[in-house]
Length: 288
Image (cartoon, rainbow, N blue to C red; front, side, top):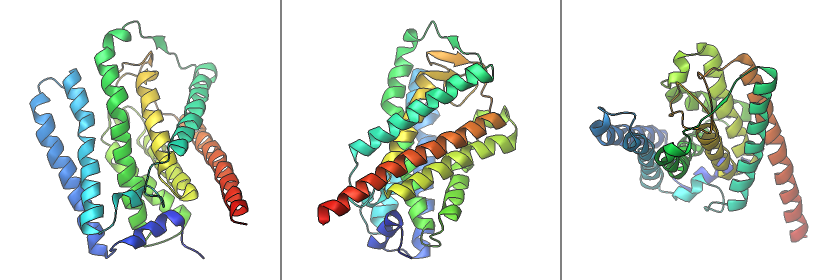
């Protein structure tokens, strides 16, 4: 069986087990120690615009740590975490964002119609423009950092142990969930349901990355997901301030939410798989 295109990119560098162990430690140290220094001055005013912006800026340190591990410890280009071309593909980014945005809006409307979730119009939406500006500029940095580390570095690293798509997706889903367990949403919900929610997200985006052979789709999907949940449909009591145009009370995660999430992920995978199959057929015809 041939190796997955995306996982095979790790072959470009050095892959001894200790390099991955050291890489994970290095990345987390750069991120966590740097975050502690950057956020310390804002501990007295954690709800300020500056504190919000800095909390998102700290994810630049996660990218820095991932870059150091990839380039210094593994002796390969950071672009190998993106895909075979080593460069971002704007078309894939936008397609992923567009597909997920449409499905997320449909799911949210379904919650309103069928589950009785009530959103209220945020009359002070425009007054919160400093928060909105920080979110629009910096949330893509946050989501990209998580993708490069989880769906990039950790996925390619675990691909040295197994090529089994199910094992890889579940493992990556669990790893992606671990830091999110510190989010306020966990305290407001049944632990297992909240845990499953993030595992589904991480596993689903991993499958999309493996199918497409690049990180592009996941980058676009993750960015639009967090942007919409911060700017358009928000909720109180979460990890982000409730600055959205429409806001609901509480960060409730139910079994129904997980079922609709699974359906949205399956639909996204199907759409992207169809797009990739068409591109692969066109490439074969061009070579013929």
